[in-house]
Length: 315
Length: 305
Ligand SMILES: Nc1ncnc2c1ncn2[C@@H]1O[C@H](COP(=O)(O)OP(=O)(O)OP(=O)(O)O)[C@@H](O)[C@H]1O
Ligand SMILES: [Mg+2]
Image 1 (cartoon, chains in turn green, blue):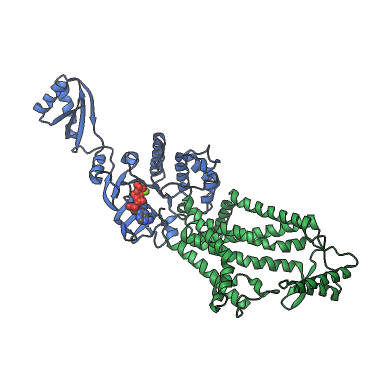
Image 2 (spheres, each protein chain N blue to C red):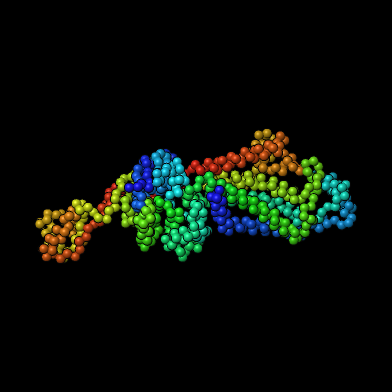
């Protein structure tokens, strides 16, 4: 165990001694800052500041939405309207835009974290081959299995620390620009069974967690490809290509029932919550979790076989 | 005599190509074993099998009696190695690189790391990034890395590669020291006899994946051995007459130096005769290495396999 912790420490040092890793944090920070400035200058922050006559304001807003709905065929303001009606019925004054809201919206930046994690996962094994250091790494009295898993754990730790960074910095930036409505305010949103009130904190955890599923699957995929081909460029390319085209591929194939066994039909668990609907009707949350687990195990198993069984020969 | 490593009928086939065709030899404790062969002979491939980077197709390698196939951890903990170029993480300092490898084996203290750094003479550059090291410095940090855990067997693949003559001499000295004082068995590969001849106790010659011969490198030739003698004298014509007519030897003249082959036993007699005939002798030199001739004889011209 001590052994394994030292391996992880080694991997962390190698990861964070390189500028590339730090620049990922810097890019993420810059994007959060830009997002906050966009909200400050062009955003809904002001609009949502309701006064004492908030009931009238909300009613007027709802009317507008309803008109727009009728005029434009494709406009879908159902959930907005439902939310507003809920406010009025239950006499809840809508919260103004705040740090929590900002943090919640930034959950979408997990896509960027996925990208970064894929890059790290794609390099962590193959770089050792590229640098030639794999030879010195594997002639220590430590099993290849342990070395491989210390690397995989390092990838997970990286993505988690990026998520935490995203969460904390969003909250901080949000606090500075927008303030905060209490420590854990409730928010009103569309749930599975109509409108519901949930604590903002649990909603943030849910959202971040759901993105994490996609992230881990793609990172594990990139990890596998780079272990097989010992080449990071290929792993990055393939994983990112699939990440961006996966959903399109599924929508082409959604008429076929077997498409539900494809990884990408299952990575977006958001389809089962809120106002989402499954890609293929017969799919359930339990089904998707099982499929994801099977893919995850296969990816790791293939990486493991490739890393522990094959010769380390010259290039 | 203790055996620290034993190769038993080791074969390696990659694809359909048989690269190593049945190697059998042992390394004795505390000896420096030279592993000599032309490019592509299979030295690096054999070393990769010794340290478990490549699987052994058939046969076995035992390190201190432990099979690298059956008990990798048990066997490898006695081994320190450089395989081909000693690559390190270029973005980290020499010190951080050594710390990195030190963490992988329990019980290596900072004192030990410093000791090893001093041994290879890298104190000045140790906090610089390895990416900025010269080839010679990289060779040194490679050796430092291999010595960290006090291995009883040290395997160095072409350690003299890229070193200047002073560097080669230095490495030669501390390899000899390790073997003689710390009883470490050392395997050094090379494709140049001249670079390892002076540090080895025995040299195994490999060609096309087969061991051609294993030779002892003894400083002194046996007395009944035939040696080539080079003779520089003031009067070649007179000397040749004496040597041919009186001693019945075959003499040839190359660039005003006389060359002849005799038994080592007869050399003092030869010198005595010269002096008796009033020939002034400036130099009598014995051609040293019969190994070199043997190497060329065995290897043929330097063709890549
Ligand atoms: N991964 C591989 N696949 C196929 N053939 C290989 C592989 N690695 C090495 N070989 C072949 O095996 C033979 C031995 O190569 P090896 O690297 O062991 O030679 P070497 O004695 O170390 O040579 P050098 O002095 O050039 O370092 C060569 O003919 C080489 O082409
Ligand atoms: Mg070689």
